[in-house]
Image 1: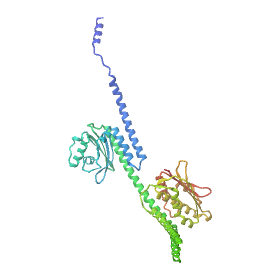
Image 2 (image 1 turned 135 degrees about the horizontal axis):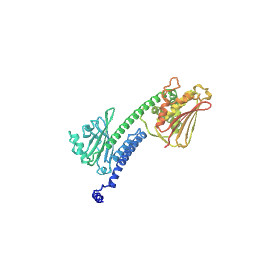
Image 3 (image 1 turned 90 degrees about the horizontal axis):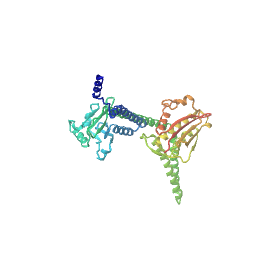
Image 4 (image 1 turned 180 degrees about the horizontal axis):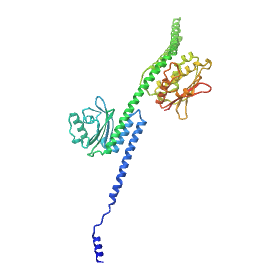
Length: 448
């Protein structure tokens, strides 16, 4: 009994084990959760960037803005900048400054020399993390100027990530903090991923630009070839007003020679001559516009008026082929925005294709209908219908493929170019076989 009491006393004196406090337990539980949240935020930001790239393949600015907004926010930085490597130096392409920096009216230099602080750091082609830029030694005046400017602006911790294409330096991606706080491995990895996305976006826009230039070149070649086919029609369209002008001027001279001169008739003949001359000038102007190798334009286009101009140019060709051309234009159509010449090129191609398609049918059956209308979605719809032999299922499925043609001397590029032009305007081009014969080509253009 005595031994039992001693054991009890010793047990009472023994120090008790303290249970972990609630805060420490919470910290241990929330650490994995915080990491998971951070990873999710990073993945969401990268997904947002990829969506921006997919939705704006022609415009780099929205992509860069999305990237810099995400970078500055997720890395708790005060500034981010993208610079493009050029022969003259590092040109500022886009940037993001926090409200605190903007209040101090701090501005980034538009062009930095290759020998600047940034230029020398990214020359290594590897990310450069500087915990405190004020403590870094510089080797040249250019480096010193850049570092001094950064320090004066209050920046201390910076990260420079070079952007490469086929191991060639094409740009830089930089972020900075106005406090000494090194970036974490996760943050450096995130910025490196973003820099890679910018490099991808640059490559996409470069290829898109090359593709557009190639399409413009092909479209120009196609227009020149088309005008060549229309030589007889153009000659007819120009000769008519020129001949009328000559006749009116001759009549005016005859009225002047009368005794007394018939000035009323002279004035009327001269007015007709001016009108005919203007008509010839208009025809030449339209041909010149179609032939000209000009950059894409954005015009306010009255589609009915644009179609009438094309129909006038093809009247001679239609007469030569014995084709009756009818129009059915909807009234009060909205004005559209686009390249007038390119849209006229599409219609010109479709009209000439229809004229050629009807070469194998009897002359009394050669009819063409050119119509405009507005769809339920408020898009403008333009249609060219012929009474030719029609389209076989095989031709219909391959009609818009590049280099596919049913003509003996065709290049197979006309309809492919037409579709690319229409799609560049946000529309759609398609073909339908008509019953009992003939074909209908239609395309839509979004209204403003």
